[in-house]
Amino acid sequence: MNFSETLHKNPVFDTIAREADELGLRAYVIGGFVRDLVLGRPSKDIDIVCIGSGIALAEAVGKALHTNVSVFPNFGTAMLRTSQSEDAWEVEFVGARKESYRSESRKPIVEDGTLEDDQNRRDFTINAMGISLAVTDFGELIDPFDGLKDIKRKLIRTPLGRIHGGPDLTFSDDPLRMMRAIRFASQLGFDIEPDTFDAIMRMNERITIVSRERVTDELNKIILSPTPSYGFKLLYHAGLLERIFPELIALKGVETIEGKGHKDNFYHTLQVLDNVANRAKSTHEVIDPENELWLRWAALLHDIAKPATKRFDPKVGWTFHGHEDMGARWVPGIFRTMKLPLNEHMRFVQKLVRLHLRPIALTKEQITDSALRRLLFEAGDDLEGLMALCRADITSKNYEKVQKHLRNFDRVERKLHDLEERDKLRNFQPVITGELIMETFGLPPSKEVGELKTVLREAILDGLVPNSFDIAYPFLLEEGRKRGLTPKTVKNG
Image 1: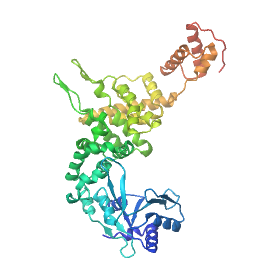
Image 2: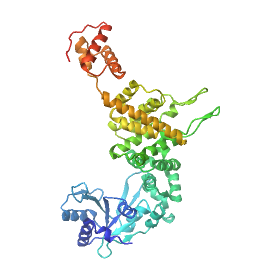
Image 3: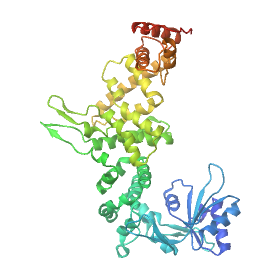
Image 4: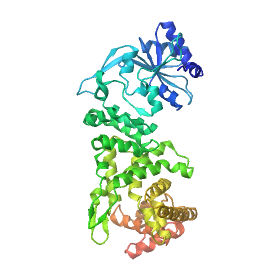
């Protein structure tokens, strides 16, 4: 198969071919770019392998393209962007090499090698394909492990046969490849070849030598895949999930007492995760990629504390009282362990875990404006994410039951929208601040100031007092008098 016509559409390949020829080097496009080219997937990350100095070739190409080159001499690699625009391609250059790993180390021993050596060290057959950029055979596919056939068969397979150590050697060299196998399967909807999957099961313990950051990066890619439950089921059956995310494994299983059982919260969680991933297909929602990951993390963690709160009541069966609050308290610790950011993204996930039962409760009772105000106040700008999670949390196999719940959510959302338009309560701040309370009554920072703030906030949320100074301030004065407080100063609106 020849890709010359496709490669000629991007001048960077002609430039690389010309500069390599002038330097007397053979250069190849290799890896993920070739795979995605075959699959018809967009890709702007190009890996170039050359027989000789990748850094020398990068510098020559950079000079020809009038662009800066970043050189990493310790790794023998160099990188450039074809331009400064958003549509630029990123090109990484490296000399062909072979790598080996010590059993206790994450760092490889690297030596110069041939193209064959470089392809042998690749993780999977679909990533070991190369395309020649030589003048004599420009665009020619070099596919020693039948990666093209594996793409057609939708199969993830390691390149080395048993005689060369097989998948065990591939995963021993870099244990993160076990995660990558499952990530590619989840992203592409591929199967993992049986010998390859068996090797992952045999060697799953070796994942513990890989840094948490690298593991989490692969986990995030699985979470963002089209059907993330597929990846998580593979992680579970391979024995990797219990090593990297034991809290999730604890959700698995069903306990029955007196004929009463609860649902398997592991598979329920995966269904909720899939529902979140698939929501745009049914609602035509425009997905913001920047926030999508954290909404999916909220789906993954929304019931994480159910095993710790599980109780059996002979009258009502199984209960999980308080799992939302306990789960929210667990979120920072899980993020810390996973090396995820402890910033507004963590707080978003924590808020959704804590509040995920609130909208559901509102569908089961007479909705009061007070309850809606409190939800608006607490959810703030994250209300849409919360409602998306709550819709995804409906996992009954009874279609009519699901539709009934969704109609109830529609009703709650309409009322929330109407109330928000009228009261402007989302992220509201009471007009009466703690500083004003202290100034009015001559109080130092104290419990009494906090109590007055709470009384005022509750009155506003209950609709007894509008959030306007002209009415809220007299209300504050009256509450102070009830507590024996004499105003030192009185403000005018």
